[in-house]
Length: 85
Image (cartoon, rainbow, N blue to C red; front, side, top):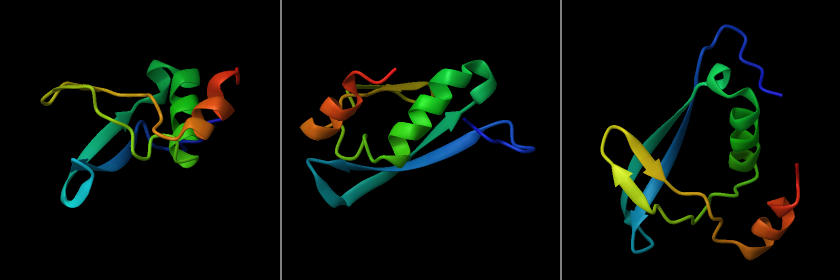
């Protein structure tokens, strides 16, 4: 369940790297707006808290619009979450 109190969105700040080297990292802010998709926002935040996206590749970026990603780098994490509804 997503508890927002007076907030209308949640910002998740990620660190990106090029070729896996931290010194090249830049920030990527993800705006989560739960009222657009309450269940989707809840699941995304569950996965973030479980570190599911750690080491995840960014597949496509359209600056100031969207970034596609989603497949966990950790095989065990993928197995754990695969069949959860």
